[in-house]
Length: 416
Image (cartoon, rainbow, N blue to C red):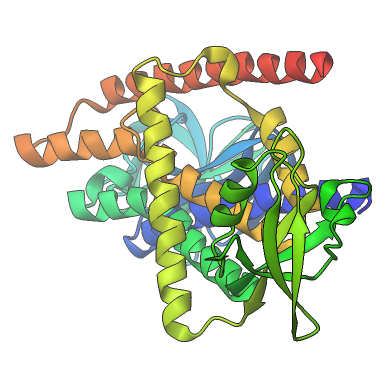
């Protein structure tokens, strides 16, 4: 497999997992009537951007996540103050469609004046002092503020994140991780279908000049029994028997071309014979697909949560943590092992992203859900400015951790 193909598949994995997560936020925010200002994949400088309807879609330089920026979720960056001189553009219904904050001289088809009163959230109206006259205009709900050549759509209160019910806001947040869970289930299901159901233990390959070859074992042999013990599809039984019989003669019965063939195999002193063990398989039926998918999801979830627990209680060293570089390295290894392996890793990674984002750590979805839970209990929201500070500090700590683990990844690569 070429390096280009591996690179493209690694990029595709990141793109799909992050996009499906952010789409969960985006779709349910839009359903709740929230104005979504930006749908971004990655962080940092913009590489590519386009606008569709009310949302700007961007691809950014650093492939370490993504975000959906909703109106009112954080304090709005642009505001118009009383006494400020602005220019407004009206439509045929005499509604303000554009509010110009700078470069007022030379603009045609506008009305320029000093702001006497303005409300862009609830009343949607502006009063201007134009010369000696007063003028009051209604503001269109989708009016644009223009400054430094950039248009920013206003966000009436009923289009802001904070105006929605706790349930609507919680749904728009939790559906990001939920989409990762659903994707993981679908991918694990595909893995079960592609991998099939093991029926017998089979020898996938024979290492040259090792006990297996000397004993007459061949690639493709199905191992029926060893020392009178039926092997079936449980390869661990076979490996245990081999490891427990160093330098001892073992009586094997293998099935070759439909015929049973008895052989005597003597493992090395280290309890090895030089084979790669695989399975003879058949297609999974509907019930087996369901149970196999459930087994993958449940066991992987338990493993990930156990890893989080060890991290919290200090049972994992900082040097053992991997960052983006390590993830790319591991993903490349799964890619080289074939499509089934690649999809299996994508499912694990998607499940991990979903669970990680639900951790109650500032800046993660879990932390935002905690604040909504507090609001539901006390009957009023936490001060938005204080919540923003908490999330900002959490994001800074996450970025610091990312730098540390990336340094570990680079040092590990250099040493290896």
